Image (tube, rainbow, N blue to C red):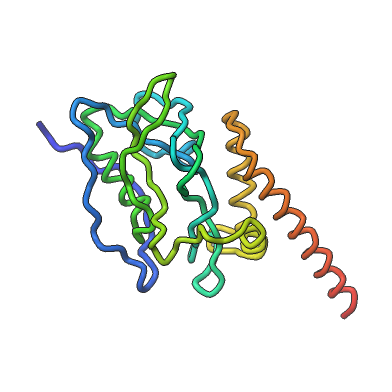
Length: 217
């Protein structure tokens, strides 16, 4: 049987000191299909072939801005925040079922996409899909990694997001885009909506302050 070609993904080289050591590849449990759980951009931009895409609830973890971003939504000097999975509660997202022949290329693609710095830990976790319990592959934030920001309070996270900007634009845009996509998919995430409200207030306050400074010069 010929080897499946790699799934394209244009990953930028890591910043100095951020390259992660090779992490062992996960193996799909014997006799089970590969389901991939997405809680952030994977939900609307998976980038890999799949047979099904359905709403799913992952148990034991919740969606949070708990990972420092030194490039796309911040800088090494002023890092922003991006999504990760933190222990506790549950998370509604999207699960993608992968055909058997595509399992190896999909896992390889996900490692190139998610594991550049090693801030996530891939593994299989329990989820509810179509009323049934399934094991899904999810990338959980590593609380021992230098990029882990899960100990920030909500107010601290809001201040970081309101002030940070990286190669892909303001951190606040990343939050608002995430909330908009969740709304479009019919996924209600109350904490993120509250976080967005706090960030919008902080951004409006900063804009008002900047205008006052401009008029005063």
